[in-house]
Image (cartoon, rainbow, N blue to C red):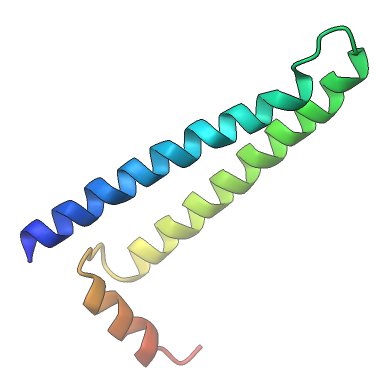
Length: 86
């Protein structure tokens, strides 16, 4: 079970790195053409919106992690979510 969790973490980290590279490139693409000054505003807005949504997502993950007592066992988390009456 330890090897399966380790491989899951490696796969998740790799997928996260790939998405991070894609999102950073997509944040910078709208402002790529420097002769159009109007492209600076959407680039800044897109970057700020992406940063805010990412930080909100990680804040939610930290709440989930803390609400289950810091357990990383996925089966325990699934059982806790099923048994919770929200």
